[in-house]
Image (tube, rainbow, N blue to C red; front, side):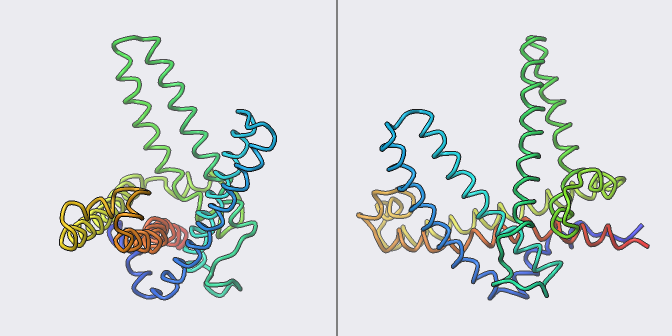
Length: 266
């Protein structure tokens, strides 16, 4: 069995950012463009929904279209990480494309989310049927969801690199490696959490140092913050734009590292 280090795989995102930080920083520009397009689409769909009467069905369709737009933007970033890790020579703009690979990732995510929703729905039904003891059924369902999530975690890098949706292959690759996958993803999640908390604390310190308690509202105050503290609001917005591709890199690179390690067997 190929040697695999869960800690090294969990740190692959940081290593990738260190090696290719210009590319990851460039993805912030794509993130900004995608956000602008999302705002334009939201306004356009709102106008169309109002023109046809603003019914619930029209609003639902508009929301669905916007949701898919967000999903595709996220898939482009995720595929960019996989491309940078596994097919860096492939023609693309900053390793970003919109094609079958990205569509395949969206389909994999939708199948995964649907499966998790079905498991949760069945657990909730069983819990209500059993009554007070149903909490154990829900806990069992959560444990099963985590287990299946670990076994199918490599479906995304498989779908990208092998160009097929193959859940059974992920199941085979992770056989006997559930503990390693759990350690890798848990450590990766902790590192991402530490990074996010650090960013929030730094922003809060900067805001408090510049404008006191009122400055905190300039960072975390929502839309009104743009009028009260435009400088702090724009700073927080810029950090959010940059942080998004960083977080996708930290989340996707460990999966690519695990896939490469598990498929390197003779």
